[in-house]
Amino acid sequence: MKYQNNDTYIAKWLAGEMSDEELMEFKKTTEYKDYKFIIDVTKGLEPPTYDQQKHFSSTLNKISNQNQKNTTKVRTLIPHWAYAAAAAVVLFLGYSFFFQQTTFQTQLAEQTSFLLPDGSEVLLNADSEIAFKSFNWDSNRALNLTGEAYFKVKKGSKFTVKTKEGAVAVLGTQFTVNSRKNFYNVTCFEGKVKVTSGKLNHILTPGKAISIQDNIATPYKTNEVTPSWTAQESSFNEVAIYEVVTELERQYNIIISGKENLKTAYFTGRFSHTNLQQALTTIFDTMEIRYTFDANRNVRIQKYK
Amino acid sequence: MPDNQKSICEQRVFEEVFNTHSKTIRNFIYYKCGDSAQAEDLTQDAFVKLWNNCAKVPFEKAKSYLYTLVNNAFLNEVAHKKVILKHQKSITSIASHESPEFVYREKEFKEELDRAIANLTEKQREVFLLNRIENKKYKEIAEMLGISVKAVEKRMHGALVSLRSEIKEFKK
Image (cartoon, rainbow over all chains, first blue to last red; front, side, top):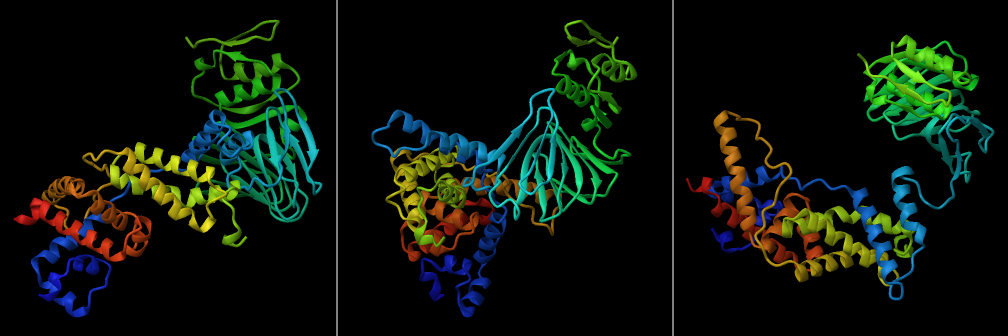
């Protein structure tokens, strides 16, 4: 076997570079079977997982740390860059950092409305934030949302609302998006709305809504023509009671203690933004939750007996 | 932008280089030392150095610059110690015959294989794993390591011969 004097022939075989004649001969040997087995089995090997984003952030941290220690020798770096980039990696994934973002924000118990560059209207509910780039807005209508907002979109190119939980894409329509921690809700009032979250793809038509809690999507119908919160109310459809209480805190800028006493339960209904006493009665009395409420607007949820 | 005008000093370009190469570089070092934390640390350090020298390194040289850096860093820092690679997912089942006996033998075989891979020389192991896990062609491996294709083939051949002789299963 002339090829066996060659100290690369197995490598040649593996790369498919053996001549047919050599291959025929090699296949007859007992060792062929062994090598074939090693090759088959090592196909399944994988290195440990690698979190690229995390390591990019760490690399940026290392760069900014060394620059603080050693300013003479090292190229200077805009100090905000590392932080901005690290935040941007998380928040505006896939965005270039070139054009400045415009940001609108609301505090607790506050709502605001504003117009986008194309005249589309946005109503921002309490404790929410919207960021977008006005540069080239007409051809790239995309914004990032944390919290809850109501959109009246002018007809035009695709309009995308990105949240941590997923994205909503539309052409010209009216809809709300509510993206809070562990909770994601989209309601369509006019036109057609496409909701994507993870693997889920869902198209909403007027009067339809979808809520996603703990990765479970529940589509439902609504009779509202505009979101209730634009009329000083918050409404819910089978929403975990914990989320309802959190929304109550947001709308009244209060802290409700004893939330850990809440049992798992789902609430359907609405509460007013103008009368705390009444709102508390609506939620807690119907859910048979015992609570205390004093003149300083301190609310405490009691333990179940 | 054409590649020859790209500057690594631009954040966007730097990130692009990071996203293209960091994972393979990490794995490359991991195959040498078998310690993923250390491999990740060396990889990050190499990118820090790349950033510091961004004005001197043209975009198209970034890859070989990075490999040279991690290679040297590895040689300087790492004492030659025994390598036990923990493969996240080791052997996939070979579908056709999955009798309990086979599954047992497969498990045994997997352990032997891990040991045999650990017993390869560092040079054989990196070539073998870059080819088997990263699916790198000999030519690409040669470029990464700065050696000839012929040398890569020799190491690959040597690795397979050594694995076969280490694994008891084959001696039956």
